[in-house]
Image 1 (cartoon, rainbow, N blue to C red):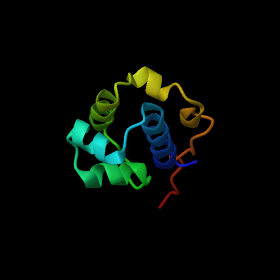
Image 2: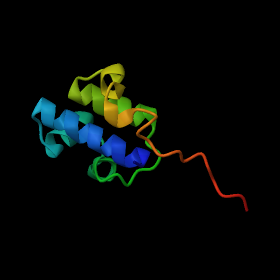
Image 3: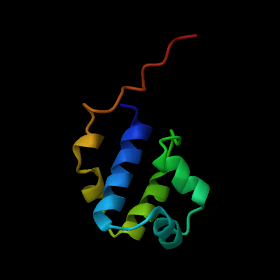
Image 4: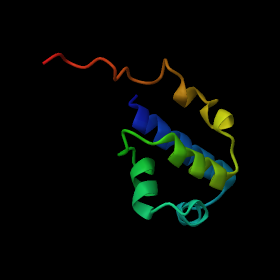
Length: 86
């Protein structure tokens, strides 16, 4: 699974667990709707850790709790370090 998709699924899972809406997350995090939408749709290939910290703070979840999920294990994430040589 692509890292961006795994991250999106994990954020969605936490949102559901916290029983808040996407609109509430946008309001609490003060991030732009496009930023939140891109993350939730798996369109953000490079999410800054600072952005993730803002989201987790808005959801009242620690980063260690967030990353402690099978979706985000190294075994589950595609190896994107293998780039074809030009």
